[in-house]
Image (tube, rainbow, N blue to C red; front, side, top):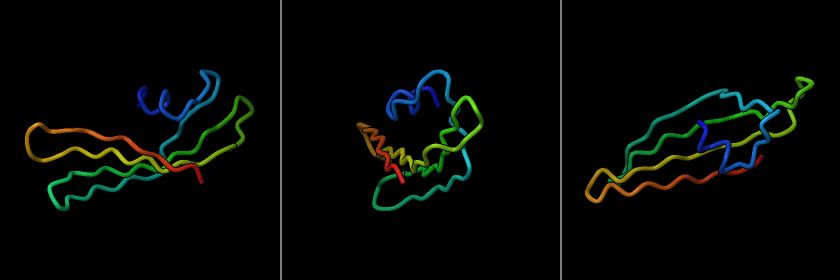
Length: 70
């Protein structure tokens, strides 16, 4: 999850809480989809994200991490 925090630009004093996840394999791609809430130091949800972590099932097993801020 540390690499997701870095990619999303989450400050150290904020929490990144996973709220759901889903796995899908399609067209040679293994894709994990995660939903996260960004929580500030006061416990308030200040942002929500969908993170997609996709890995090729075939060599050279490339990996892509993308996200959407809701």
